[in-house]
Image (tube, rainbow, N blue to C red):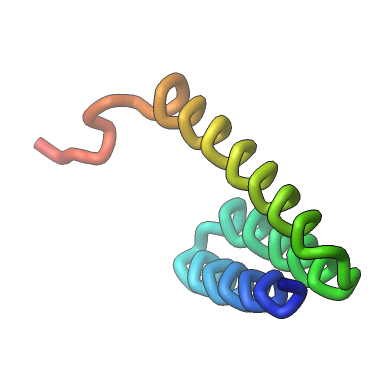
Length: 82
């Protein structure tokens, strides 16, 4: 499990780099922050159950934040050009 958290850190770093190349600095910083957190968690060598609980909490927070953002912050039709 610690290795999988380091794999997740690798992919969040890749996403951060892609956002950085595209000029989306806020998203890049968000993913770089996640990279640091996942990499540090991967170094702790916790029990597998603890890693599952941490990942479950991460997913719960992500889905709550994503649902809030898409429901209340996104403007419908803002991405279309007429």
